[in-house]
Length: 206
Image (cartoon, rainbow, N blue to C red; front, top):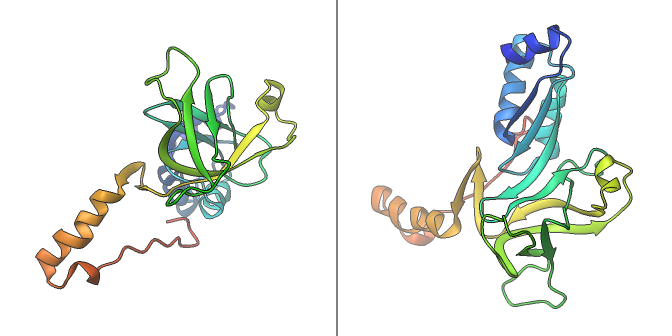
């Protein structure tokens, strides 16, 4: 926070790359301390950039642009600079191919993304691999510089049917189920069906 404020006072623009929740918490602390971050920029990833979290960041005077990436494939989306929704990204079609199924499949969301590598330097060579992610995929003209590169496919509302992410940490659903069905009953009693996980978002994005 102090570093960003110092860079702003010098007339430059601070740009910090971090997880979504970390950016929101930093901006909450700055707002509470009366530290203006007007003009500061964040590149955020690791979890959804929701409207509530973006509002917290902007309340401190900063702004944030999302990046959609994975360890297996690298970058799969770069933040649109004229977004219609907070987490909208441009899909770089020359780096990675993303498709969605044309026909419904049992147990698979119609918004499921299937990933194929297009560059030999990709972390892993993938061919129609599901990473458990879903998104709304559409083409639209936004007028931002990334569209001029030919990246006209947009993704937004990027979520996962198989993973939970908090603070940039990802937990597989099988690990969470082990906690709910085995560890909690063993520690506190009850049956595997007695525990549920409920996610909710407060007005401050937490």
